[in-house]
Image 1 (cartoon, rainbow, N blue to C red):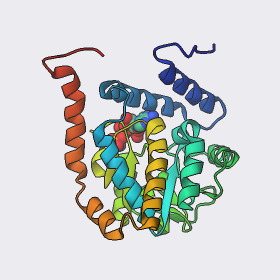
Image 2: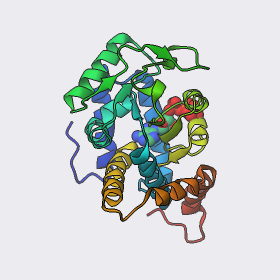
Image 3: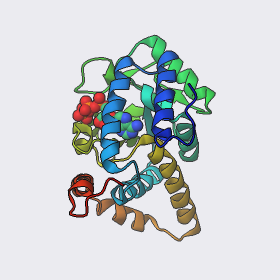
Image 4: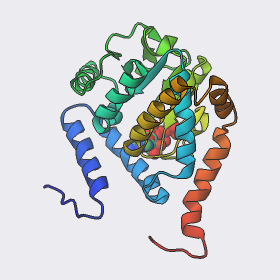
Length: 258
Ligand code: ATP
């Protein structure tokens, strides 16, 4: 069935279609569909919009990415199915690799995902041939590459699970995540959590990085400014504010279902 553009839930419905398509192509794990459902529930509470808290986190994340020495983008099935073009554009802008890392790992799915990302323009896709492991994790999620995650300083890991996020932090990485659930272990463990839908946040990050790179090269922004902005960001405070915004939308006296 083709969803008409006039449908009030058009964006949500075509996003579901894209995930189901990714599942049929063997990119998305069945469990990934359930994870998406949890994300949708939180997005509903957010009003399916980019909040000012998400904008603040996206700005700091952009600053961290453009000033990183070895940034990496870690990609799982849902991310690959939903925003492959955005991941390609962001990795191109940052000249950084993309590393496939999936919770329900099968070699076939890793291969398909890597191929899919290449088909969408990702120039350097790692993860098919891991040569190291992250400490503190059992299971295939620990697998990583020296060229990518192992020696990176900043990792963007949209839709991560809490254990791996903690393992990345314990390995000394700065972790940026995109997660619609401000209460998840990942959200609370990362250095910077963007509580936003992946589909809205990745384009924002591309624009944020582009603007920051241009401002740095023109001297309108200095490394000192960037460092101060990063240092003054509190993930904990920002998460509290997002939670407040979610609840406040429905608990205010002027409650409306707009
Ligand atoms: P944690 O271990 O961090 O507590 P979890 O086990 O609750 O995580 P997972 O199943 O590992 O969660 O991952 C799903 C997460 O991804 C959920 O928190 C969900 O809100 C989030 N999510 C799903 N779809 C999207 C999306 N499109 N954009 C952003 N976040 C999403």
